[in-house]
Length: 194
Figure 1: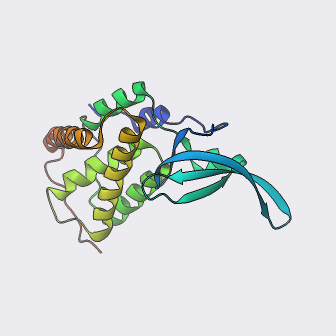
Figure 2: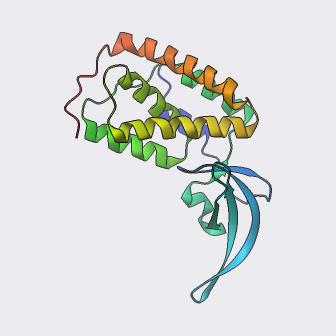
Figure 3: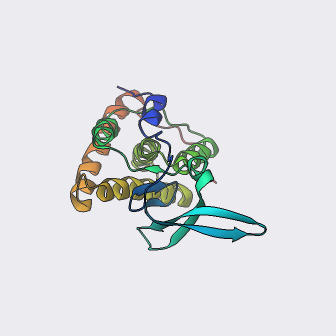
């Protein structure tokens, strides 16, 4: 069963609206952040109210203008209901993988930039499947690792599962998805990589 990507995107489409101090949010391509405080910043002649977000993976701080938070893709971490849907999605089949590395690279890059955990799951499943067939390029390997990091980071920081427990479950679910997909696409006729 292939779940429509539009259906999955709707699952984490929640807008940032007004973020609360102490709230856990995801920042595209960075992972889970904590809203530490709101402050005024003077940028040229303008005064902006910004969210100070602490990136939990490296303890760095990102300042995001409040009015740009939704446009940047900042959103609350997934809910328990979305977590259950994600688990189902991780173990489900996925769309065919392009044999053209340029198309794959653009698709995977855009999905990871979206900040949507379901897009990251799609990248993880497809690159795991592809890695069974060929050695991934440096860029694809980075995308694979980034997708895994974004998913594990969100789930463990949302408090649904411990990191090590979830990593085992994640491997099992993705392996199931790859087994299912192999019946539909036994091989990706991969064009030569860059």
